[in-house]
Length: 168
Image (tube, rainbow, N blue to C red; front, side, top):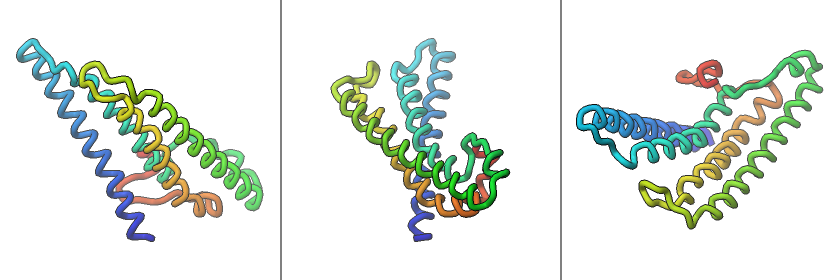
C-alpha cells in the first residue's frame, strides 16, 4: 500500500507542477506578445483560467493530506482524549459525506454543461468542469489515507517537502 500511495502522490504532484508550468508559460508568452507586438493570444486567458480551476481542485487533496486547510482546533484541545477522537471521527465523516455529495454534483453539473463550448478554444465546458469531480475523488482518497491517524492521534501526513504551515 505504501508504494501505491507514493505513486499516487507523485502523480498528483506532477500533474500540478505541469499545469502550473503550462499556465506560467502561457501567461508569460501572452504578456510578452502583448508588449512586443501589440497583439495577444486570444485563447491564453481562457486556458490559464481553466488550468487554475483544475489546479485548485487537484491541489485541495494534497493540502488536506498535510493539514493545510483552515481548522479550528480549540475544542479538540480541551476535550478529553476519547471525546476528541469522537469529534474528529464526526468531522471526518462529515467531510467524507460532503466530498461525495460535491463529487456527485460535479458530475451532474459537468453533464449539464457538456453541450456548451468555451468561447476562445471551442472545447466543451464538460472538460473544464470535469476538474470538480476529479478533485473531489482525490479529496476522498487523500482523506481515506489520513483518516486513521487524524482521528486517533490528530496527526496529518508529514513530508520533507511540505509542512502544514506551507500548505496552508
